[in-house]
Length: 124
Image (cartoon, rainbow, N blue to C red; front, side, top):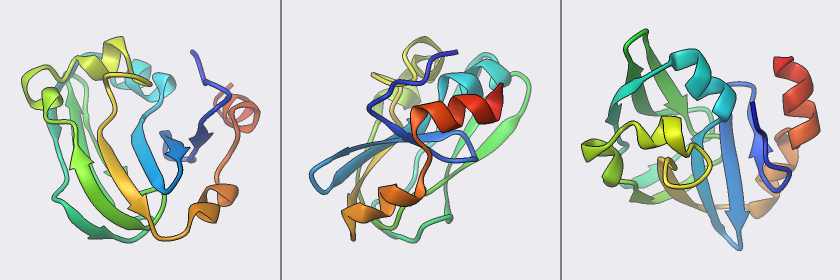
């Protein structure tokens, strides 16, 4: 399992890459390993979202899992490539497997998330 040091993490196994006021969100390598082969992704609608709100669904051959907004803001982009190739979440969870992007209402929200070391300790 990998957990890049430049990301923040939630207890629900989402990752956040904050660049300015834009946060890219996906599920962690650990989460995709637990789910196994991802076969479908229900992407969120664009618009305002509150922290902890269900935003997307990732389905695998094993189960379906809700994806929650790790921070509040406005969903401004979704990864439509996942509709055609949901397995990108398995092959590249921190790159081409991202799920959506949020324009954050307050960038300091990431201070409440875990760093890579804390996340790795949680899942070990």
